[in-house]
Length: 225
Image 1 (cartoon, rainbow, N blue to C red):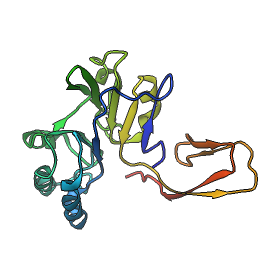
Image 2 (cartoon, helix red, strand yellow):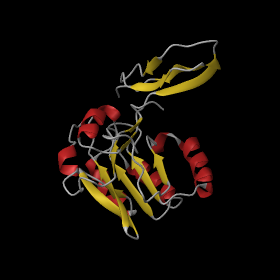
Image 3 (cartoon, rainbow, N blue to C red):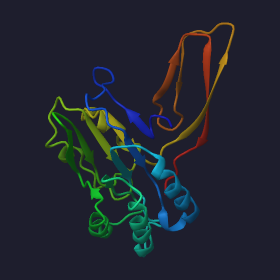
C-alpha cells in the first residue's frame, strides 16, 4: 500500500518506539454487505498475535439508512478480537453507532488520544472524526494531551490528512481508502538515480540508484464515495 494508504512520518527520520507492540489494523469492513469476507476474517483472526487492534472506519455498507445489521456484525466480530480495540468513524458511519460500539468495548476516538502503556513505556494513540465527508476532524484537539517527545500514531479513515498529520509530528498514520500497488523488481545492466511517486497523492514511494529497479503498477485507486 502506498503512502496515501498507510503513511510513515518522522521529522528527524523514522522512529521506532521503545515499546514495540504488535498492532492489528483493520479498515473498511462494510460488514453488512461483506458476509463472505467477514467469515474469512473470523477464521484468520485466531491465528494472529497482537497487543492492540485498531479499526479505521466504514463499518456500515451504505452511507445512510439503518445500521442495526452492521452493529450485529461488529458484535460478532468483536468476540474474535483481543482485549484492546480502538477505532474511528468513517464516512459510511454515523455518530449514532458510537454508544453501541463502545458497549462492545471498542473505544471510539473522536478527536482525542489515549496512552497505551507497558511498564515504563508508552505510546499515544490518537483518532479523528471523518475528514472526508463530514469534515468533523480536529487534529489539533486530538494532540492536546500528547507530549511533544512521545511516539504517536494517528487513526483516520481517510489518508487525505497526511500533510496535517506530518505537521502535527505524528510518527505513524493508519487509514483506510488507500491506493494499492503491485510491485515487481528487476535487474538491469545499469540505472541512474530515480524515484517513483504515487499517482494518487504524489508522495515518493521509493528511490534508488542501483541496478535493482522497482516497477509500481496501480491496481486500486481510492474512490470518492
